[in-house]
Length: 124
Image (cartoon, rainbow, N blue to C red; front, side, top):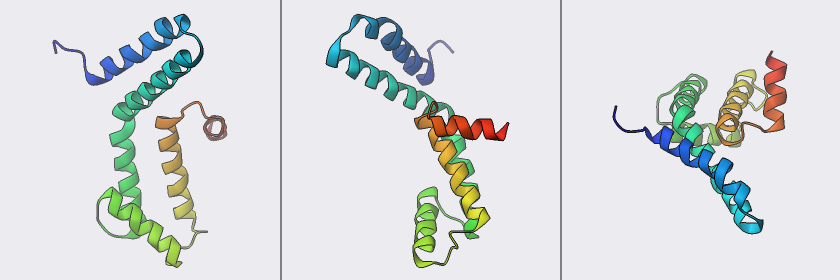
C-alpha cells in the first residue's frame, strides 16, 4: 500500500501532539492539546479493537437473549428485560456479559483506568 492507513495517521498525529506540541505549550492550550491527544488515542483504539469488541458483545447478547438482532436492538432488549424483571440481575451469565462488555469498552476508552488494571492483575 502506498498510503498510510487511517490508524497510522491518527497515531502519528497523536504522537506528534504528545511528544512535540504539548512540551511547547502552556496553560489551557496544553490542557486542550492533552484532551486532543487523548481523543485521538480513543479513535485509534476504536479503529484497532472496536469491531471485534462489538462482534463479541453481539454474540454474547444473542446467546443471553436467545434471539437475533443488531447490537443496538439487543442492547435495548437486554435493558428492557432487566427493567421488567424478565432477566434476573443476579444471573451469572448476565454478570459475566456486563463484566466483559465493560472491560472491552474500558480497553478502548480508558485503558489506564485503575479498576481495569486491577481486573487484569486478578485474571493473571
